[in-house]
Length: 131
Image (cartoon, rainbow, N blue to C red; front, side, top):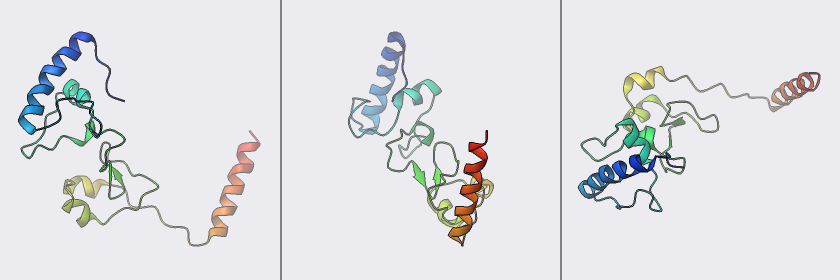
């Protein structure tokens, strides 16, 4: 859901976005179907696209096709537990800053024996039910 703006803010935002949409060839409707950025958030935070026209990832909406890259949420840099972590070199090739990549936590170890996971889950469930 896009940022909510006051009527005055919305008018200022619309003027700002009209300039960017014309300059970058974007749909002049910031809420157009298929738009995967929250341009109001970008406006509010003073964000602008880089020289190639790429907007900062922090303004990506949840439906952006590249929200998760290499196992990391591009808005936050946090691991996405359901995604595999890609090798550092691949992440850098995809545009991640090398220093940021080095700071990412390693992928958690994979549990080899599913019976061990089942036992851990059962113990956790017993503990939760005792509360």
